[in-house]
Image 1: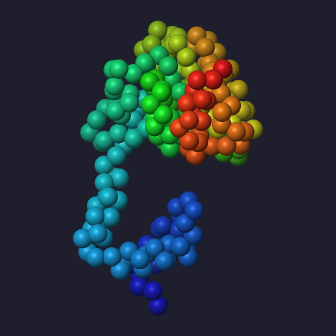
Image 2: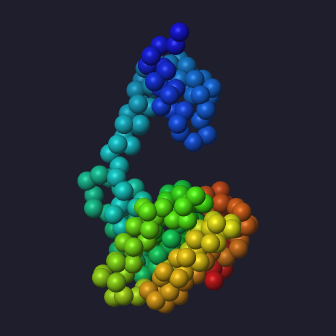
Image 3: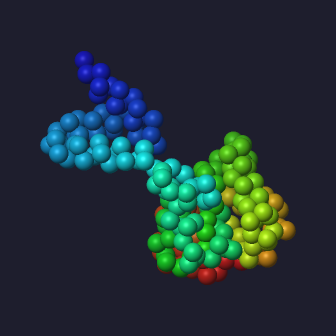
Length: 199
């Protein structure tokens, strides 16, 4: 009854977070009713995502032909201060404050099934190796900027243990963000306060 191309769209997009089959079906028919130029712009925007790659240093996004992302390649930033965060959207939220001038390490989304997934362990190991081999064995500060919930606290303690000899100080965002809250959804003023009151 439904054309195969629409069913394929529904099957593919239903796998995305927060999009169930009913919403995706409505989205498919909404898109089909757009004029060709608008639809082509959306397709082009989606295809543009294929040109992006991960920065080998912080794991944020970069253009495929560049070695590092804009943040890691910016010589004006303090490369001796690194904020360890969970997701790309956390980085975007912190950057919007305009207050943090260090670098980042994006761990990837944490979940309680496996304490740290192998990819997250690998990213932490890469940071340790970089501090040891390229940064003289110790940096000024590591800021643990994980969500203030029970699991975030547990992972923060693991990171603190792993890096205790590799940073002059290890801090955690101040509790301007409520326990159980998410960095991604915090407003700029709250994030400013959390950055200033890190301990």
